[in-house]
Image (cartoon, rainbow, N blue to C red; front, top):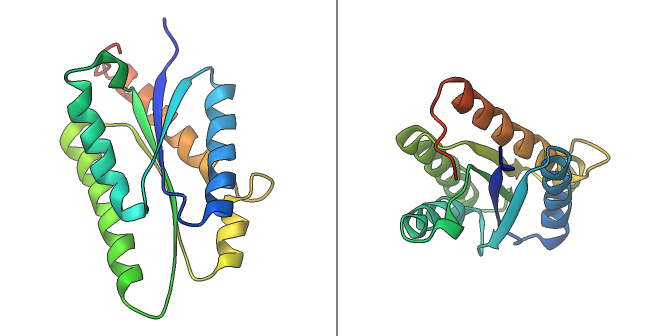
Length: 153
């Protein structure tokens, strides 16, 4: 069987947080023997649309077909309601993709009150949420395999 092919879509709005999330996700994917490719988008809000665009492109180009997706980003509460919209809509968009298209998506978008919380959750030597998101994606792929829903990439 060929290795799993995973797409990491990351929003490096907070670069130092994104680096840690990516390090955790990549380590988990490499430990599982998965191949991966990365795309960056401006912010967490754009992650679901990017995954959908890649899905559409994958219908024409086999090099853009993936077994699963890992969404990585960080939203830190500010002074306006913008935080609420970005958090809710990025989560809703990813859940809609997972449900409507039976995608294996690892949710690694941190939604935090401040930078200290983000650092604690992103750091690979602390909560390692990037690694957790990658492992969730792999677990959902395995569930699809057990249910006979896997289409070889």
